Length: 337
Ligand SMILES: Nc1ncnc2c1ncn2[C@@H]1O[C@H](COP(=O)(O)OS(=O)(=O)O)[C@@H](OP(=O)(O)O)[C@H]1O
Ligand SMILES: [Mg+2]
Ligand SMILES: [Mg+2]
Ligand SMILES: [Mg+2]
Image 1 (tube, protein in one colour):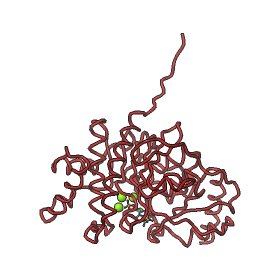
Image 2 (cartoon, protein in one colour):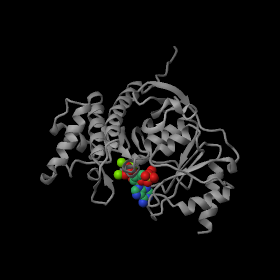
Image 3 (cartoon, protein in one colour):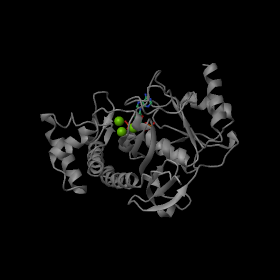
Image 4 (spheres, protein in one colour):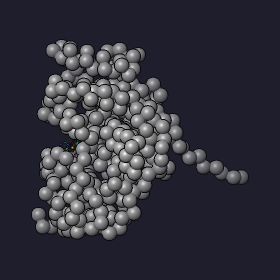
């Protein structure tokens, strides 16, 4: 008797996730091209949020739930601020923007969709995680940002979609213009899609094995990454080219398609633990493009513990070939601290 093993392909999950991110990118693009000072709102932790962050979360959560009614979704934002009576005009603004993309979503449904993402869940089981705008500071500056959505199963990403509205579709052919999606499914590789959701080509990391030839990337914001320590690591590796500073999970995107081979993220804040949505989609995109992602001690990122990567300090993404040597340089840098 022959036994056939059934391999789950996540085809439906990937398609629905792409559709959701396409919608959110349309909203974010429209807002970024008309940004004014009033778009910047400070959250309780003083980090910025905009109408686009709320609108993006509403569109993505509601789209996912139409297909996967039972699924848990963990997003960065909540509707608490929008529900305050004194924020009625802000709320109306978000409803108006969302309705330009999805006219069927009323105010109550929109607020409920945003808050659906603020719930907790069993992080050891299947759940989605969403950063409706990653790199909000970059978004506000008019620079790079990403819409990042991933499906997690048993603590690891199995599907990832990164919407990057300001990243060139194909750096080898800049005339094709700005805006792309990167997608990956566990065991199936990574690919680029247009911002409208059409597949264009598969991608892979750069085959660089000599560290001094590698280009590395890190955060624009000095508050998010220790630029001084990154410079020491680069020096230990013999890298003389300055880092490619780029906001958001676009850093994972450029490693995945070979424009850089190392992404360093050592926080300047001691004991800082990253949010899961800041790394889930980027991690699987880099891994499926042939690269490697770990924390600064070389351990895999563990997405099963809650809203943060509680067991991981720092994040290092490389083309794989350079991973061990980068971890070695980090150990040397730490010894000299
Ligand atoms: N102290 C500290 N250390 C490390 N990381 C931090 C820190 N503070 C904030 N954040 C998170 O950084 C997210 C965006 O950072 P990036 O470096 O990718 O973009 S940027 O260059 O800073 O714009 C940003 O994500 P968004 O809030 O989605 O924009 C934050 O979650
Ligand atoms: Mg934020
Ligand atoms: Mg983020
Ligand atoms: Mg965000």
